Image (cartoon, rainbow, N blue to C red; front, side, top):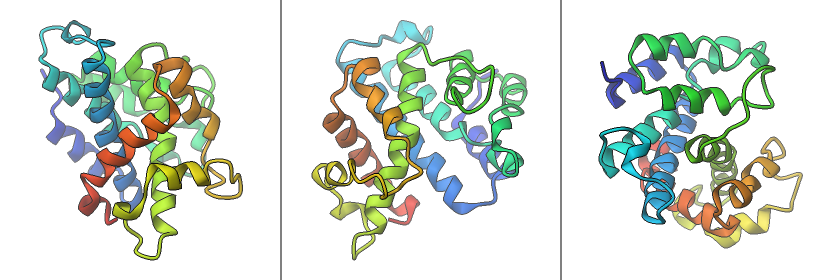
Length: 205
């Protein structure tokens, strides 16, 4: 049984009523797809990482991991330290690829006790991209147009050292893109920003 993107989106909507949280998961989904294709084209990944899949199907798997990573968040909004947890049996029950489950589990490293440190490129990509999407959206919201189209890599980097700006964003988590994925921070931001600009209508930006 294969866990499809349609099933993943249905699960997100079933468990998540906050439209901004849904948009966050859509943003992480598109960034994960872009990172997968980037790393594949750099020779970091191969289709053997997900047995029997093509480059496009590999990106689909990465995207689904991004889409569902916060699906159980609202169930623990009063106790976020329990997130993620109930998502795991649900994904197993629906036949999600083990790499999806492992990536969702590892993205909670440092938040919930007992969760493993990310280990694979897919897991590190989700861990780093999760926070970056929040920073990019914050940069869009302070623009007069409130549009991703007017955000640039330079404008994001300008806000990077301003700790009071988007104070909840863990910049050290994003910055691990350099040591764990071999992607310089400006390039990492560029990949994410371009991907998010591609779905600006869905994100309302």
